[in-house]
Length: 362
Image (cartoon, rainbow, N blue to C red):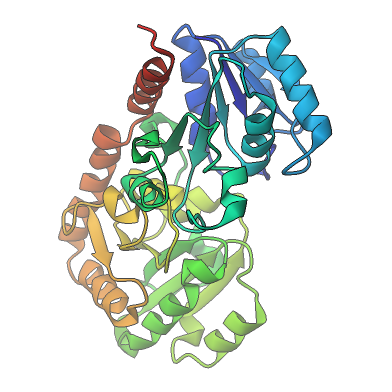
């Protein structure tokens, strides 16, 4: 198969981007891959080294006559079997550009929510009738989307797999925080958006015993937001909460912690920070939203709690802290679960199987 991938340039990374490695795996499996993206994509040189054909192009608007004309002309000159589309600008312009052409269009869907069958704007993108298939990052995303599809079978789960060899960071030295000896350190790595539930985790810190010496690292953009700053200042745990902001060494910080928490309220796909935590054998606590719970075998490789339940988060944090041997076993089970259930080769194989089904190739 000839495969075109359209993806965004993205932002600077502090860790591996699994889909970028999957693209390389598709190419190495003998299916020529072409990638359309901006030249400033951090993976550009790696893709070139892998032998992938690169085109410095990405749509600048969701619906652009200029982009539609470009894409139609390009596809006529470069026949593809599959166009794999990773953002709404690519989906919308390709869907309108490629009517009547034989290429199969596969849209990527990475989170739940914001798609409704009764919303006309959704038919410009993910619900456009020209879309032949939808690759969903988790069963949670797939099931949420199927409620709004006239053809539910279009949505398929393809986990965004990882490889343990990608994660070679040594645990960071946390001495710069001047933590007390024996401190139990909880990590939350996420950009502070309303749906990530950071205030619920701060509230959970207030439920913990004051003498427990549980310290929380908040890593990601937006941790200095005024509302969050005010909440932390009013918390009884204020001296044990550290807002570190965006960090290039986020994986190393994760590896140095005793526990990780993602307190998301809604719209999770398959959160990479939880996967990174599990790979580094750090017990993970997640909320039951989107695909987060699919990563965890409850009580074995982590804990799952209801969204917005600060008391439940506090309880699970204390459970991990109370039994270091059980926590160590849980961390090890988490690493093994990623290797056995969410590895990159499985993602490559599943993607190829799906593309072959759509194109009726062997």
